[in-house]
Image (tube, rainbow, N blue to C red; front, side):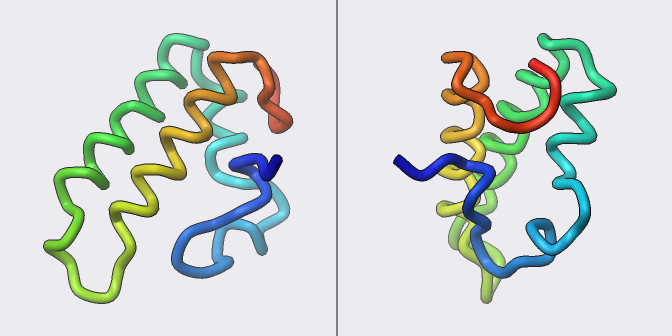
Length: 81
């Protein structure tokens, strides 16, 4: 099964970086803060879906939900959990 860390919606700009942004966030935030960060992005991209030309915001919302589920289930493969 593909993990959230293995994909990126709409490009490769984060995957091409030495460390993915959400791994930095996970390292500097508490567990609850990181969950809030992921949930906030789900909400942001869900509300923005269909309103900004040339983006797959619905896909981004699903991607953040995927990461959130993996993190909460303990199947995260990124930074510290």
